[in-house]
Length: 221
Ligand code: 0O2
Image (cartoon, rainbow, N blue to C red; front, side, top):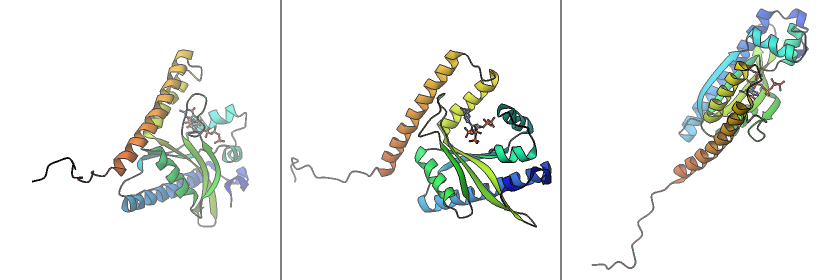
């Protein structure tokens, strides 16, 4: 059963929360398994850390108001994709796409939407890879596919996004022009840093001790 197909009236807030919290557990377990297998197979961990949250009622109502919708349970379930959210922070951009592909290729994961703000950063400079997926939650009487928003980004992108988030709320979306401009500059520096660090990491990984080559001009004895 798809959650959006359930009439809102039959779904209480308590049951709705149970579903979203359980969906978060399902996806967290999948990611932990993938990460551990990755360490065994490749000898390094692509994931630096994982954070998850259930969107606060205040934030849900704010988003519904922005979208001019009545915050009924049915509307919330249908129109808000990030009630259950998980944020994965990686060291390198290549790890982001590897993890996204591994999650998307699992049979019981349905990918509903992808927004690649790394390939196409937002105007303010925001970069991150977003996936809306739905995963099965096994209840006693039914299986309910429930939406989770997965945000995957590098440490540098995360650093930038948390400052921008603070700025947005501090100024209620109307930050002074010079702060917005400087943050955009920081986003460009972030993208540059991520590219540099990736290239350096690749060089370090591929580095081999140069083999000893006899110097032909050298006199032997
Ligand atoms: P909060 O307070 O972080 O929860 P859609 O899911 O496609 O129907 P939505 O929700 O606009 O529509 O999608 P999008 O663009 O993928 O954004 C979802 C979340 O990504 C946001 O949730 C933020 O957490 C984050 N995000 C998106 N754009 C920005 C940005 O410019 N700066 C920062 N710092 N974070 C961003 P909320 O509910 O908007 O906010």
